[in-house]
Image (cartoon, rainbow, N blue to C red):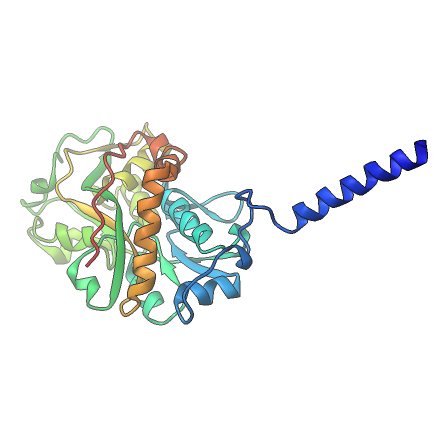
Length: 291
């Protein structure tokens, strides 16, 4: 009798294991079989391939910074992961591709990546080449200076022509600050990454760095003794997800995913776990522009 009871228990355990292996709806399955998309769409292609290439920054504290793991970490990265999960692709199948400001449109148009999440301000000029889903966050341009600097209080401080300000090639902040400097050729210093701007400020080669406030707050959080913000935000920078211009279905899918992330709390959690730790405010979710 004991042998029969043991056999019965084993059979029940085997049955339970078999049911689990068949993929009960426990929310943990992110494989191709758990999602269904319209034939011919980018979503179907990526889901079937079970891999995706995502462009992001590797030098943006709080948004996309390459960490000790060798992979980028930050709010943009977490937003991208939410989209990838909705596609039914495991997180470890993401290939992260560095996408500095000056190449973001290029890597989308050339098909180097499937989407870009990289502190990517939505504007009409960029829409001539690519399309945007979102926005999922609204930042504002500001100025980073040395902690003891009292001479720079805002963008108007550059109008006398005596101060040098650094930004990144191909970025919205670089274009915006041009209207405030007296001599663009001598006052505006451009690099390919903001890390180089920060180093130039610390070394005295420039007097300030300008980009979005949340990026600058990331640098301050890592070196409060050296840096501070000078004044208030002087622009609005809505961040979006870049995709190919003609891919309206993919853009609509990402917009739906962003709406869902706001409603289910994953959007706020992504912020709290990353950029929110630097003291920046999340604010209300911006209204998605479904153009």
